[in-house]
Image 1 (cartoon, rainbow, N blue to C red):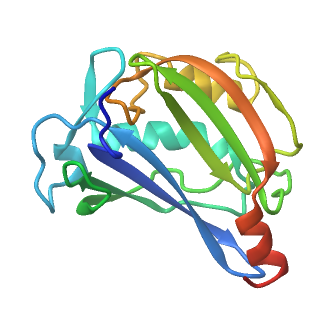
Image 2 (tube, rainbow, N blue to C red):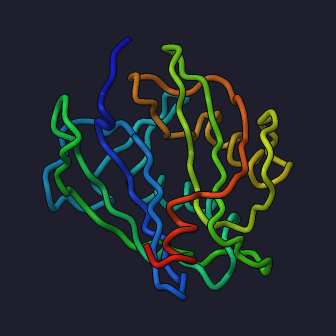
Image 3 (cartoon, one colour):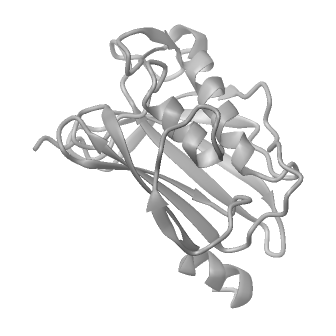
Length: 201
């Protein structure tokens, strides 16, 4: 099956506000840009392909995606801006293209951050591969794996899945296809973050 390793383009959100120790987490989404935007192009002038066949500017889709993501985070956590990258063909080397501010940067929840925790939401792509959304130190808790059922009125993971699989979805799998089905949601401890917090490693 084809593989774009990842890319071809990527939106990167840097989530900040974690202390003791100070740390940041990144959320990366593969996307498809129309044309070949050059470095320094404004987000309002970059066009992103949507899953349903439509398009919107990078500024619009980045803010829309973050609105679904920010509900996973405590209100002391925020993401002031995003960056947009292009991967060099067949490599994991990427070149900076653009950056933009998010309209509503802060998380929305009064619930506490679950330290050293991760949530992984997986999807099947149209080419048969697996696409994952990995979020670190959200308000999610637990250590279980269950079916991920898209539901626009459901819990935060279900709402994310509904968005990813909607006509507005922009996430693109590493096998050059949009996702077509939700698979599982897995909650667990992230060992790397745990070591950073509790062992300073």
